[in-house]
Image 1 (cartoon, rainbow, N blue to C red):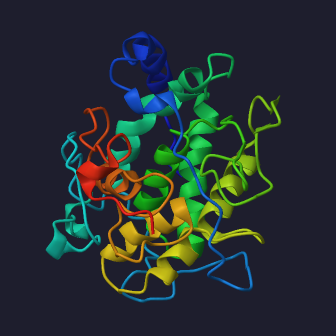
Image 2 (cartoon, one colour; image 1 turned 30 degrees about the vertical axis):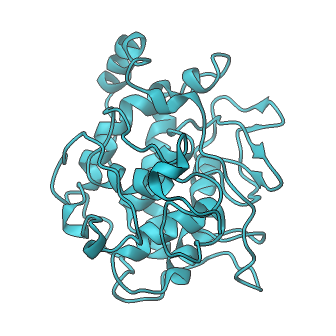
Length: 287
């Protein structure tokens, strides 16, 4: 277990006023779509089955290339290295990635809804611990879990439970899970560590209603790095476009590109993805 310092929380509070100009993505969460039903029997406790993709050495927090680069590159196409998507050796380390996003975690709730209490140091610690526990149990790379958390909730443990046809609670806005510290505006403060851990477990290992990240990786089926980006798109929209292009299909067209950028160092740089505002600019097809 890595203990977070009180100085981190103090720094977060001191810099909070300066964040709105940077955190443009905090104005709203990524829309989610109902799961496509590709798995007939839903099972919790999902694990990555492909040995080329499963990872059970997540205790190594200095993996990757350090901080990476805080910029945004628009990735289009099928998620393959041949299509220009980053290979796994371009990903930042989990330690650096978490450190870079920690400030957002401390102030994210305030910018999602000014009435929400921000995370405290113990809640941010519980996110770290929950990621490590879930990654060890499922074989999902801890960096991918963190990227999904930042995409879905920016790490706010009291993020609202959304329901656009499917109930999506918790920091990973998972498929109808049980764990939440903000369900029907019923806030839990502080959010218990066990609840935060369960939010992350449900998003990673799945619920009785829908797929977790591990299932999504298994569904991707290529056996290479593209499966992580494809899995992110499945997690967001429930399925992949028939075209194979990750900007296409329903829900958030920028989703997979955002995840690839988060994995390689994107934190505050303005997004260069136009796919949601102008789908034609990215050749988006909704099938």
